[in-house]
Length: 337
Image (cartoon, rainbow, N blue to C red):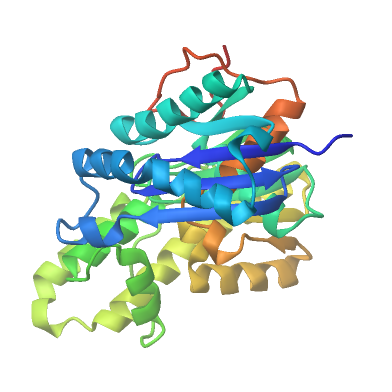
């Protein structure tokens, strides 16, 4: 089969990214312009500021990616972009740019589900990985247990009922006085502490759903109650342990429920070193094959969007020029016109 080269754009939050991906697994060019330093002073992403910065740098990011791949825009076979979920203004910048390119070049256009992109990031790092497997999606906006039946077929086994795990990390980091983004800082501090604080863990008897609001609230109450007496590294270690216990308990249940011995991680929180170490141990103890993306493909990037677009395209899925941004799109929802 002829090689398929896709130029993909990702702009769902505060990263303006472009990548050129061949056959869903080989990255020819990958450029990310991050806005972390811009939003740090506000303690989180400001949607309007994010959108304006996407507008300012999208053209340069696309051009730099083409130069990195040593290609002309006319040489790509298709154009892809994230259409949801995410911040609506941010999504529209990348989506509009991709549609304009596809229309002007008369190339196929593929709208990609952001979370499917995170799942597919594993295909770039692990070219041998094939469905079926269980994927634990852990990010700032999403916590899902997904049965990946095939490259474009997903069954949701469990999802968060309140805060996503990455959201809980950010809120906890804020209350203990850490700068945004808080996840990496909690991970670093936890290495200096021990899990001495007992924090609540929520499980549901009849469901693989998650709930992290109780853990978050318990940390906030501890900080307000004990104030200067709090051992921050110990609290970080305790928080990480409690959250990871919940994630991996449900993950193992999902594997047994489906009779699956292959597991992958996806999303920004998959970069957490404690979670990775615990998952490796779980794999060794239960004879599971474990996969997770390279660190650069854990957070938002366009390579993962190019990978997902490839599998959509070869399965006959394309999008029309009237495809709109869908900020509240859930995993499993599809819109192809």
